[in-house]
Image (cartoon, rainbow, N blue to C red; front, side, top):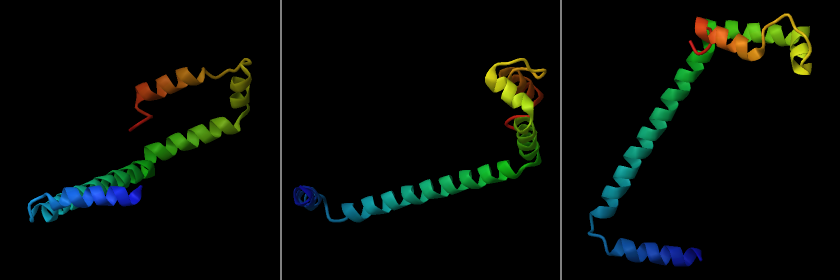
Length: 100
């Protein structure tokens, strides 16, 4: 099966003009470099966002909330003095606490 693929690719390549293959390899290399550079930049931006004080404060608030009994009451569906998780998330988003 693999040899058939190589034979097919070889026959296709042999039909191309002589300078086409190096040109295609160069284009593929440029696109690969661009993809790696874009991915790396997005990764670095995300790391920076996660290091921001607002995200840390939000993480700390969520950890404190989950450490308390209110989280267990919400999970059981019992009475809780806190708003529902959906209402709390909507309030936080409206204040700009999430995603800033």
